[in-house]
Length: 412
Length: 103
Image (cartoon, rainbow over the protein chains, first blue to last red):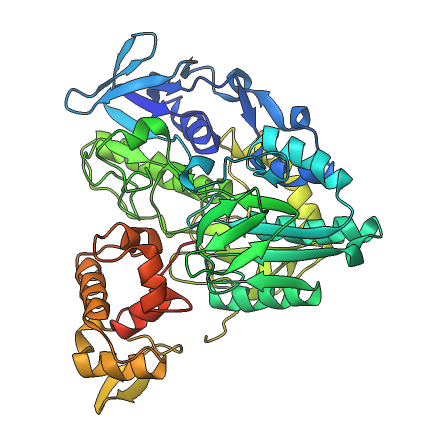
């Protein structure tokens, strides 16, 4: 099939960027720009601290994942010229585009919090959102035999908002298996008012923390970390003392986007929540964690967003009206420890409820309840990711728009 | 659901946040503040409340960081003015929906 003579430039070869490139490469000229040689299966980082995976088991070469009909440029974008619809890479190459897609993701920025990059950083203070941090935390956890483990979220939004909870459940399980759980106090520190934002799930998770004797420290907006005294301090003066701190630093958009005028205060691109089009330039779209959408920053969400963009970009290029079809759909497994996981399914309007998924009344997966099937689903997802999600194949029975069928709706 | 606050019938959600910011009044603010043991409201409280309402009317989703950068209060003062969960409590008093710190 001959390609349509329009150039779509995608910055970023993460989950969203690769999925989108693979969906569009047969119909349009597509260029993907990303300096990273390797692509990581990021949900695996959660398991690295507990020794289940090593970094090399979670990565593949980016070139192998992108459709050969797309151009892949392994360079960094230095500058975007929105007026003239072109960008420059750091080697000085100019690239013109008809449509620009920002898929530059999010990253943790420990420098945003006073004292976080102090004496204790990567000694007894860790961030597991990257392979290096996760690996170093693994060594620290192996040696940890008694004291207080604090898991702390600096601010919202964060990538994979359930990951800190999952880490906490897995840590509880890990210490139990080693027979040292009673020597360790676990505290969960969050700026939110509960374990989670959405009421039904928050109550459920709150209960699960209680059952595991994990202390919930809520409404805690961190002013600073004092690493010489092993404590985190809230703006209202409360302090939590830790021996080992696992922190989720403030999440920000890419440095490149933070220099532009199309982002919010944290560097996430401001887009229409349904169509993913930039509020400022109609030929710019953002997808995945890079967008300022009020839903989870996660691969499963990016996957549903890509379905919307794969429709809207051709519509835009044909001069048609865009569809506001993205509904904030998020679908994620939450590891509970003990070989069980639960599943959340929600969108902009509807919070997670109990029920069955994907077949109403049948399952086999259970929503918002721990089960072994969900845990296997979580582990199997790594293969779905490499072989179905990234290549842009349709996952059977999973729809981009959320469904209420098979769910138990609770008024809250 | 309907609730009578300071002699006025207003529409609120299950946690008592007004669902329509236009049904709000100064009397309602004082009544909610009293319920939350944050009274009497000082001039500084009102400055924050007015700023929050102005931002919300302009479609801005609020968070603690933005309040800290507002020039009206810093985050420490914000906690002092509205102890516990400052954004949560201030939003309730200001007649706004519960802050949607997103997932």
